[in-house]
Image (cartoon, rainbow, N blue to C red; front, side, top):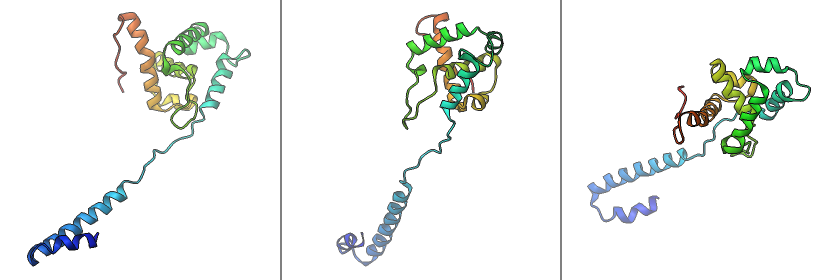
Length: 170
């Protein structure tokens, strides 16, 4: 960059030359700083093992020989297993958000039953969104988002087409 400055500086007298030299030094250092700041930053990811959490949920509540019976399911989810599955299947067939798809990194996202479980636990028990991380391995943000996507179709069904509850309070 110094070589590019010389022809420009020759057009100014000596007093201006010192100012221009200082000016270009500052510009050069700012450009170097900006270049250093343009480093690609990535967000830290936490391996929550979504697949294992899904398999555990299925094994505990939905498999043919599941750990918890229908009565325990109804107590914990506040609805029967049959109604839960009808709701989750309806949401999956109508809303892209509830369909299990790969995320931006190519890893499979949460399953429909994981998302519905998180929403029902929050709505049924009023648990914090952090609690979904322990059993379902779901982040607070995803649990909150899932609850919102779960509530909006129900809200618009009850209160009229096109009306949505924008978001749940944080």
